[in-house]
Image (cartoon, rainbow, N blue to C red; front, side, top):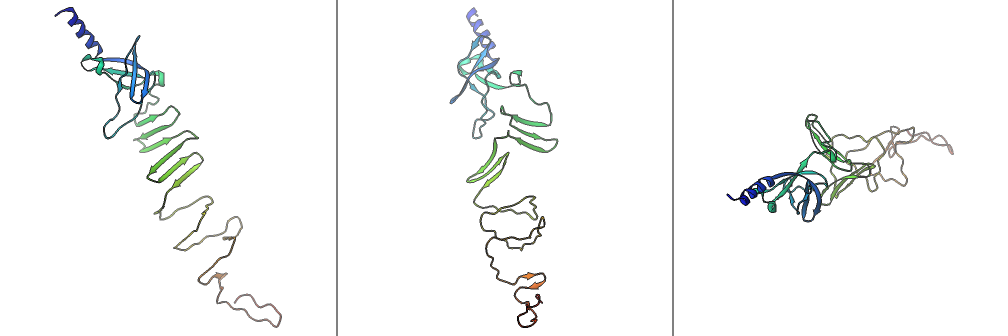
Length: 225
């Protein structure tokens, strides 16, 4: 075997897999250049978590440590496998054996703790969490929650609101209403008229059927009987 062939075999074996860092990145198409010592590669594909009907998008970061895999030692068909913890990007950032987590550079995180059976999503103040199905949106922000939908059904046997509630349009109820006044004020206060289709009981007296006793000409009648 001539020296050239031996050298080529040695070169290909050396190129089979190498540790590198990301030097440059482009997102469309998704490609990276990597550095190994003084050598900088051509544009390589990077390995995604999934790239078929189900796809995962997580671009590598500049200076992220990666592995370069070259089938048969041929760099023309090489690809990059990211995902090695380094101090350049804060190491693992976690050490719990019970957590599966994703941490983002703005401080947001997504964590499932299978010991506590707890799923947590944290977004910095000023951000939002948005759930969307068609035209229905649920938006969570630091200052409140907004639900946008055509129809809402709350199948809730019992519910309690600890603060004030406001309904901008008609309020309809089918199972009756009861309550009491708070802070010494009236239980019900309405600006505008009211229309009732049946009797009203006030202080145990029928508004429609109650009577008064006459107490003489020109004298006020008695209280309701």
